[in-house]
Image (tube, rainbow, N blue to C red; front, side, top):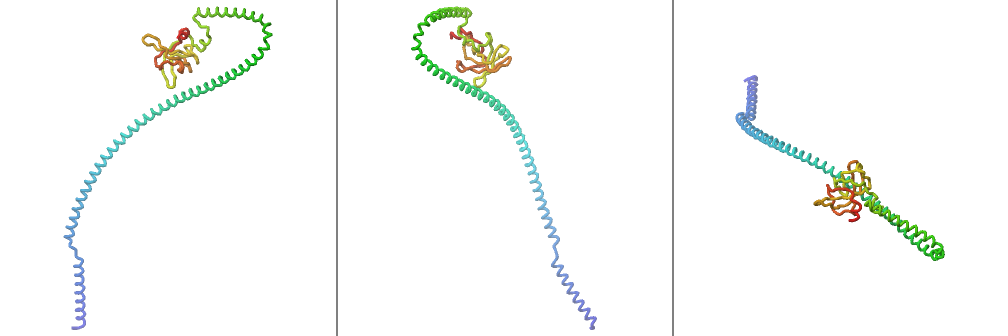
Length: 286
């Protein structure tokens, strides 16, 4: 065998070795595509089932979510209705609170005015006390002087007799004046006629307010003025009962606001009670 033959033999041997290595490599990397396809088919089936389950779960979740959204929407509508109702109630309560605040302010003003009147009366009382003490001192001084003036009394006897005559004449004039007043059904007491409104006015209590205030159905058109006092009358079984007395505080042409005078109250004032001026003689007789 020559060199060329040997070279071919070696070449053929090398090629066999390469083919063998290639075959071994192919065998080592061989994949059973049928089993893999079956496995993939199985996985695909499982995934399809899971997808169907997820789709069903999604549909159920969407239905539940829609139901919950509807329920929440209805709840929100109900809450909104309640909010509107509470808002209206709050506005009503706010109006009532404002009205009560105004009435409280009126009451506070009345209390302040009463306090001012009380202070004024106290000041007047203190002035009267001071005047009384000064009068007592003057009386003591006059009593001391009286002893020194006894001698002068004799000289004044004639003047006294003259004064007595004048007094008798004045007494006669007073008696005549009283007789004239009685003939006209009047009493000789000026204090009874101070603050008296025109005779014949009459009206009704139209509103009773807190704090002793009332509203009546007559005003300045009827001749009333601030400070005028009217009697409150209630008819029971055809008989008039005196309930109390009011003093006019503020006026309008057809109505007035007055305060109930607590010192004259005999019963609870009610809407519909009459207000008028009782005859002075009847009031005195009572």
